[in-house]
Amino acid sequence: MTIRNEYVPNYAVHPGKILLEILETRKITQVELAKRTGISTKHISQIINGLKPVTPTTALSLERVLGTPAYVWSNLNARYQLFQTERERTKLDENKENKEWVSRFPIAWLKKNGYIDNKKAQKGEIVNQVLSFFGVANKESFDPSYGACAINYRKTSDDKSSSESVATWIRVGELKTLEKWSNNYNRDLFESNLAEIKKLIKYDVENDSIDKMKKLCADSGVVFVIVQGIPKTGCWGATKWLSKNKVMLLLSLRNRYDDFFWFTFFHEAGHIILHKNDEIIIDTNGIEKNNNLNEKEEEANKFARKILIPDDAYESFKDEIEPILNIIKSTGTNDQKKFAKTNDLKKEIIKFAESNNIAPSIILGRLQFDDLVDYRTILNDLKKSINIEGVY
Image (cartoon, rainbow, N blue to C red; front, side, top):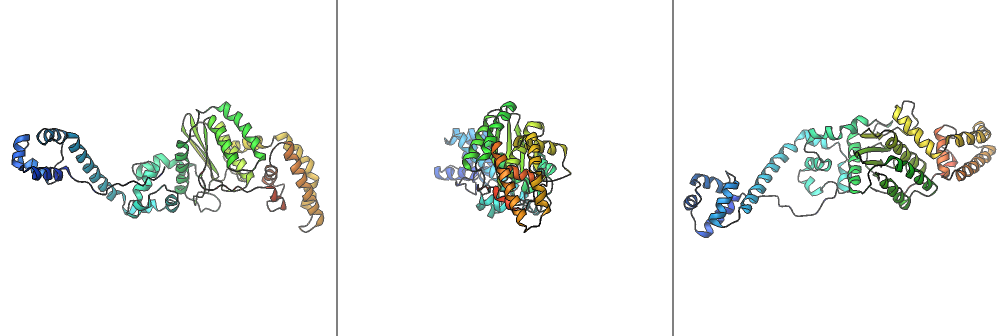
């Protein structure tokens, strides 16, 4: 959705005013026009004074008498009626209650990124701008269309996020998804392409690799979109079926390290593969350590873990490094032995990652998730930050 800089007049002229100018120019009286058209003088006066509309029948009569095409009169009348209705609706929309509701949305972000016309917002049309962004006619239509965001949305531990920001995040993703081409959804092809996407894990997460991911997803009917920077979303990722043949896979890059990026992507892919009948799934804490996950989140987590690191290989690797982990845990922070064993662990992680053709950060992230390695460790230099900005 983009805002076009085109001139739209903030007024409309009633066709009666144009009629009066024509009559004065031609020296035709209202009485004479009434005789020629068969319309009462009173009705002609009411049209000229903006009290009555120009109906299609009247437009045809004026065309015969004055030579001005009927469609001109009809267009003038339609434009005037639309303008008046729009003005009245704006007065109703821009009330105190609606403005309070709209204030809960990330307006500054929407303005900055061109989803809201700042000039119109300054003229007091902020409610209309937000409704247009979401593609709904009024506030009452918002909940049936985006209420699912609030239903599927779960508060994060910091409790600073809002359902309105989540709805905004989802809507931006929708708009970007609708702009993108994709084939019809094909589950078998998507699963096959996920294997191809996994091969990209050993490379840096940058525009080139993401473009390849987008292409592989689109070929199988999945549109992969990144929308970041919207405040108070608290979301990792989401999936939404826009039709039976097109699905959105949306990420936020909430954590800008590659291990979180890959796990979240395959977690959302798991929802698409396993939970096709769910129109929308939003993940706030689904990929974090949490003992209260619902069944679908657990299934998506297992799907992601299995793709990233085969279970048998991971279990064998844990057994191999267990002696190293035990020494690290039993020694003090400044102990040289702990430092040496941490370096040994790093070498083992890199070696295991190379044998499985994935990034070492994925292995480290899994060990941290399983509480085998502390999150505050010098091994975090195995992780790579992601430097992609905005909506992608």
